[in-house]
Length: 436
Image (cartoon, rainbow, N blue to C red; front, side, top):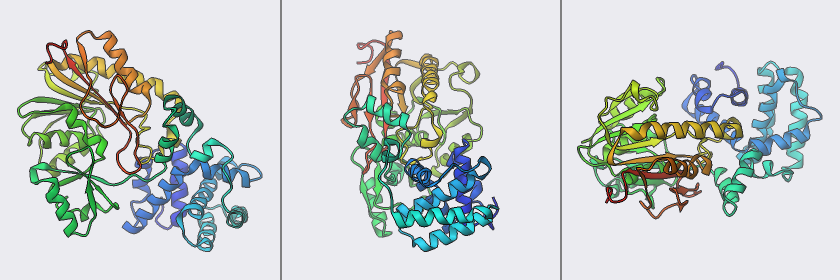
């Protein structure tokens, strides 16, 4: 994308790419490569905000257009969505939004549509935001997610949807190898950064406001990492010990791998696997910054014949690919990218991984099954099915008091002031007597 394009035009092209199936993580880096840091942050805010409120904005825009734009002009549709996001949520002067959007339309080579863009946005400014006509617009989620949540969580579905539309807090994990959480809170205070201890994760700190990581004391030297509180709880479930042999399957980008190693002072034999050769280096970068060591393998974790040496593991963390519906507030493009038809194939992958990795666990060992999903189809139902077919698997019923007991694991729902949505279940190999 050309650096000469106005920011709103770049944002419109990013939104078009998302509509066509690319994630923001995929298309934003290339789009912002030539931008100054301040403009890069503005572009991210525009794209994330437009995705977050896409369904509400799209309903409003559809009501203001006499007919849909042609396919070849679809980028202008997204340009107007970006402008509507700013009109409704940014607090920027409306005259600047309108004028600069018209200029962006010209820059996109769509000069014949500038009159339409100007007219639609002026009407939107004059009328104010309409009342949403559908649940999709009211909650700014696709209808299938709304209905699935309503069915699965009849007492919580509205709260989940509302939490998804609130920007997630920035949460840190203190590296205990460099001092206590209290010590790091004092260092933040000295740097003028306000933070508080997380309620459930013993090494977590939630910041009052996000800050660039290079402003965090000791970040470059590995004293702290960015990780949501729910994800940090993996070590409480796995309970790693010095000298153990541990597996982190589906490990990229490596946050949980590093949390496990920090919990044992880097004194465990950890194998981290990911099938993506592009994402595997991210684990290495995190390990290097934190001065930790693990064995990295590029492989399909379920294809154990391709990577396992036959020596069993004391513990396995299986953070499976999932719908990511528990982290929509961090990745609002999920609302546009995910389809209801994705869930059943994902459940098949999850079950395949669980079945394939069970044999690599030692008798008496722990396997922690984790997802960032809020759908029981990917969570408690997978565990229930597995326990039914695997006689030597026992569910460890209680690890912490947080989340809700589903009967087959604990579900955390997204909390506006705290953690993401996450699911954990801990299975031990052998009967109850063997795991005393």
